[in-house]
Image (tube, rainbow, N blue to C red):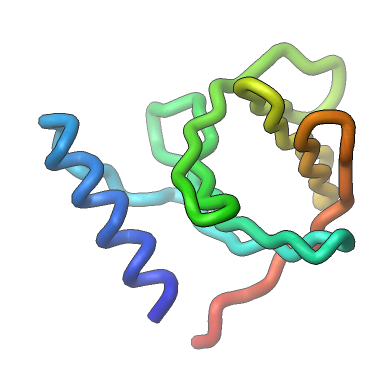
Amino acid sequence: MKQRNFIAMLGVAGVLTSQPPAFAETFRTYRCYDGSQFVIAFYEGDKRAHLQLDGRALTLPKRISLSGSRYAKGDVSIRIKNTDIVLKRGKQSTECITRQWPG
């Protein structure tokens, strides 16, 4: 149910920006050790990470990284290396793990 709501929200965002909605190639929910959680989506042909974090939608551009992938905008960043992911907000960072959607 949550997955459908997020996809619907992305579709509405596409209508509001006059762009056709794109469908996620990769779509996952993460829970972090500090108690936060977020949903992240990646789209074919788009080098940005699309997040639902703290009740708001964020689009983080891909940044240069020596290893793995890093996406950042303002004081929010996501670093992905192999299966590890770290969420950083301001000076606080936390490791996160994926949670599978119920099938």
